[in-house]
Image (cartoon, rainbow, N blue to C red):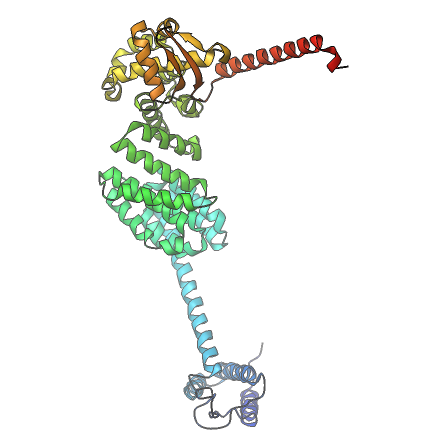
Length: 498
């Protein structure tokens, strides 16, 4: 394109000036409209509808002409003319505000370009420092350039959760120089998951991880309740790791209240809360509280998402808590989860077998297992310190299973039957029954003279496959009896059915 002639440019400027003069854009302030004039040195304000927008267009055209003139002939004079024109503008005018807005947008665009350039340079520097990570780091840069925020979040989480990759880069630097530049574009909850992954990558420097998350938690108003709760739970777990119990209980209570007030919160929020709560109760007790929180954690957390070592530790801990926890008599819950499969082919495989024995209430098999794995069993302080309680629990479970296996119309059970099933003396049966009733395991009436107990209710439990088969057989028997009764009634009173 050929350069415009200076005469033509000056003609445009002269025409624009004449239009401005004809339309009364020389400025001035009308009465009652102080600060709204275009220029500050006289003239009348046009009151025609839509005039202000037209003046703005004319003014912006004038600026373009001056810029064109600067490129064509005299940039210094054009710049000076522009400054002179702008200096005459009333700061309260619409045109001045429009110009300043455009100027701010240009500055923001310039800053954005500089920021993107810095982020690109950072990715290139990171690749140079860790050539093995060229593919994943280049992918992060490409997804950011294409503004694919969802895919970028997935890629970040995959990258940060891979410890072999995370150890090769400065994850705090990755956050400060890359992630935080576009964090407002990400889903707040997923951003919280990313920051939690960054904090874990900073370990074993717990202080650095905790400081980082506390800085992120200051943005809770922007993050929202779910994301802020997730960050708070990560901080709680770091505190527990340091042995700092200050405000942990209060934080967990507040988090539980928030969680109860959330409708349809993401599973990751529940998972983070129950993980923190289970870790807290693992430290301070009691074991039954840890057991319940750990089961809830597993309900909201895919087992495969946990590191193998964490799966193994959790399987051992939840087994010990189930065996030693007060009020834990429903072993079907933990047996129904896949966590115990982690113990197979390990030195702690006997724990899984022991839970199976407790669920069945088999006193003989319990004694055999303890004898077979005596050294491993008594090497666990939780089991060694509560040995008498554990024996009592398995006997109580034998009673519960006896009642469950007995048809409801035959649940007047002799003391001798209870004693034989629990491998205890007849003189201990009454105490056992009273203990079971006080714990809410069964309901009924003890006939001390007749040496029998009539049971009307047994605590519901999660049934295993064998117990389900027993229940199915019992239902089939009941159905058969109902059919027999119907046939009998029909035979005795044919006139009612004819």
